[in-house]
Length: 247
Image 1 (spheres, one colour):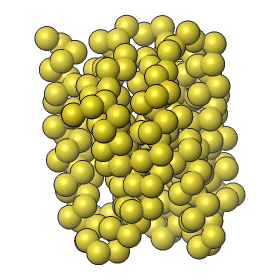
Image 2: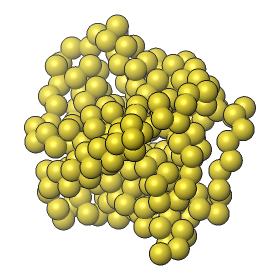
Image 3: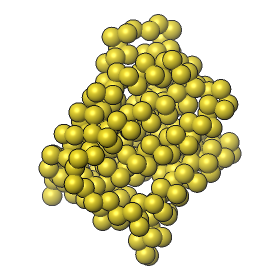
């Protein structure tokens, strides 16, 4: 199978995950870029940020048109993560490839376990400024270091910390993810990382189209089934990446 076909297929799967679940797309993007398309870990996490920003903004527009975005809560949450995202993005380029791979494997495992949970988070009804700042800063740092959007972390955090209704949490998380992704990408601007645009652009195009297909798929297949399938896939990815980094 040619690299171009692999890029299209992998991008489509990542986009479907984002469109169907509001999370998981970038967690699948990094290992796909490394193991299928031959990107280095540093290049893969940087390229993933490009995919994260473009697909998140695309999906955000659709959610905004449906009135499913809490702009004030999202901007508050995103603001707390901007500086950590920029700092982590700049620091990430200096970390050894094995360290990046292990960190990513740990986050992928966390995402997989989260997706395998059957229950959705419930709102607490109260908002703590300190907790909101801490959660936003943590998400920004994860985005900057590993090139992942962190939707699987942002959605439950928005629900439990900022009391955003679940019906608006996915759309609001896309605002947070896009903001953090842009800042993290800017933090890596100085790094001499080569991105193979001949593979990245088809991957990105397939991810955007896949996100729309994912929205339609979510209407036909139960959310629980989709979450379990992607959760199992993420756990397999985490084990594989962890083993590769150690051995």
